[in-house]
Length: 513
Image 1 (tube, helix red, strand yellow):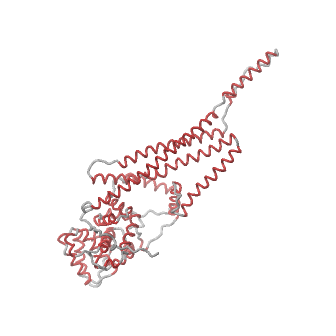
Image 2: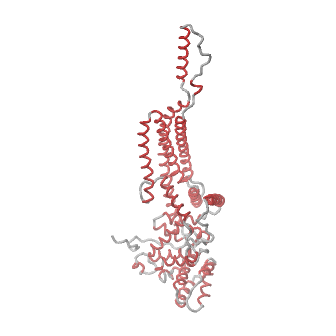
Image 3: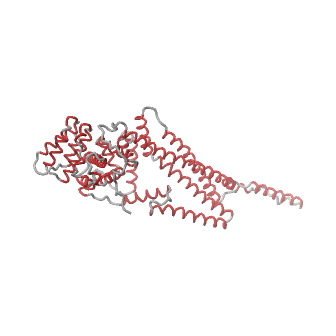
């Protein structure tokens, strides 16, 4: 089957947004798209977790009832049997009466010890009761956490007072808090694991109890439970070979996480060309993945937890989180376009935080490539074509990200630019002349930045650069300080002979003002 070709010509008319002057200052279009997306995601998560908790509560109630019935049978085994004392006393009375009937009173016992005074439960009886009680306590604790979980979900969905902007940011903070404290992991993975552990303990105690009563029956039950347990663990291992295996469970998630992190601990850090990584961080400052001992690992985890608790509430990067959530989770073209359009309005700190997120970085590059491979005939209708406008929007966002990463090196930008090589030297990607008067300064600055960095890496004659620079300079009356610095630097650099090549470090300083 032939691969589908991305094209915007066969789709309904789509209004391509332009980067606004400030974040979210596009008439509320991005916020409306984000609110709909966040409402859908939060509703799906809370609905799924509530159904999970309801099922756990039902199972825990039934399990506690069965466990209590067995405890009612095994707890009396820890105490002496009163009938044995009664039988011993009756036997003693019979002996006394017999001796009196025979006229012999010299052999009457002076003191007699009852069986209850020397009673000690056997190790098997003690183990059975401990395991039965432990499994029931774990089930009760899981039920209690499930009830708390429903209260947590009610608070998570509860709307606070204030306007729409306040509610949006408040809900985003709750979402980030739920991620930071792993709410979904606790309710969806850890809680079912507690009940599964309680069930395994119950099965072990049942086998021991049956061994006390009848070893033959205990062997049959133990064999059956062993086969079931092996099959149970086998379904967990299947997910390691096939990621799309339907037998996912908390155990499979934990084993996958364990394997992934174990590989990272024993793998030496790989050197990247030029000493720079795609994350835009210096590898010298990045913590090494090679640890001398597990004590060092625990120390780093503890320090990271303390740092997260101490600084987590200070650096929210709320605008960056809004964009990241929309880009990483949405498949709606309108939502994606409005999110990408607001990227040039983010400051340097937000961009560095955003680019440090691996999920966003991979997703953004994937979307850029999809926009780059829109069917080429659709681009030939002029700069106002939706396909060209979409590609122009992605190039502006990409240019803003590339030049806002102060720590990124030449190899980082060169690798990213080579992955989008087909975007270069396309005059249709520049802002049309009739749109300059209505375009924001952030849009003009990002568009000019894309033309500069593509020229820097692929080379362009200064004469070919002077014409578009003249067009962009016409917006100098409506520019801010950052755009003014960029235009001024370009004018001073174009006077140099030969090819127009900008040092990336200097270009970053100029772009960020």
